[in-house]
Structures are given as structure tokens and as C-alpha cells.
Amino acid sequence: MTGDYSYQMDSGFTVSLPVCLLPPVETQVDPAVTPAFTSVVANAVSDWITQQHPTTSGQTQVSFKLTVFGSNDKQPLLVVNNLFQAITG
Image 1 (cartoon, rainbow, N blue to C red):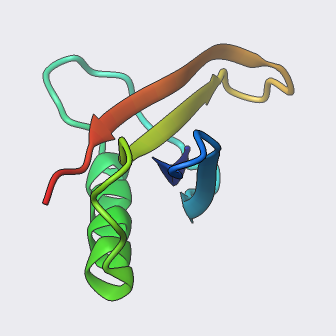
Image 2: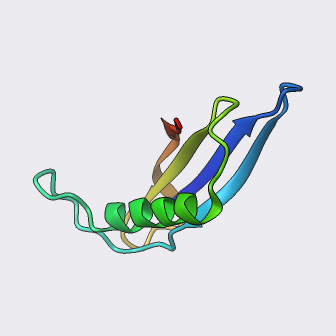
């Protein structure tokens, strides 16, 4: 799973900066249980925002990409792009 921060400059150009990269971790699939990696990603993004104090103007957001692999697979089973949360001041 990856996370990045983006904002739009006055010129209309969008700037995107990497925030976190979670290496592949084995996770059990159980709809009744929140996967452990979600708190790791949330904490990494929260720490980055606290340390960097990013701008909140210019359509700012934190975006995520989730790639799911099956056991021992080299190709992804599922890729979810552009999961995002707007950042407001």
C-alpha cells in the first residue's frame, strides 16, 4: 500500500509527493476484523502531516493505492487506485 499527498498550484499544475510505502504483509481476510496494516498506514500519514505541516489550500488530499496479491502470486489479484481523503485546515 502506498500513500501520497497532493495539491494544486495556482497555475493548475498538480504536485504529488510520496508519504508512505508499506511493504507487502501477509493479512488474513476476515470481514469482521479490521486489518492490522490500516493503523500502520494511518499512523504514518498522521505523523507525516504533523511533521511536515503541508498546505491545506489548493485542493489538497492524501491518496492511497492498495494492491492485493494472492498467496505466492506474482501478479496482483486486485488493485484499488485513488482512495483519497481531502485535507482541510
